[in-house]
Amino acid sequence: MNEEIKILIFCINNEYYAADIMEVERILGYEVPTPLPDSPPFIEGVRNYEGSILPILKLSKRFSLVEDKTKDINDSKVIVAKDGNSKLGILVDVVSEVRDIKIENIEEPPEIMKGISKRYMKGLIKFEEKIIIFLNLKSILTDDEKKAIEG
Image 1 (cartoon, rainbow, N blue to C red):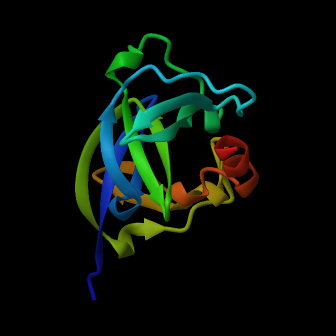
Image 2 (image 1 turned 135 degrees about the horizontal axis):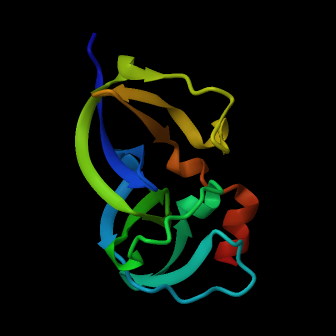
């Protein structure tokens, strides 16, 4: 059986990542977020989204990646990830495409990969000579971090 899922592919620092399209509500253009006092360092701040407060998480900081200082932040995109009633904006460099991927092309991730622990990953996708890190957006924040941000 050739089961497929739809994924959203995006880039951070020229590395490819993907998320299940079912975890994504919308993609927004960049808007300078309002800083949030006492928030974790990877939270850029918050912005208004459909009348609610949307925390903005910078994935490159979350994964302790070296940031590309030459990149214009205004070209960035915000992926609105949904988990039940809570929503989180995930700041990425480029949103590349939505595609169907065969589940059989998703492999178990190694325990740790470039500082990204296995808890953030659903697997690795081999696609057109690229390895795409398939993220589990629901696990990007721990329960304690969610509480700290939501206050």
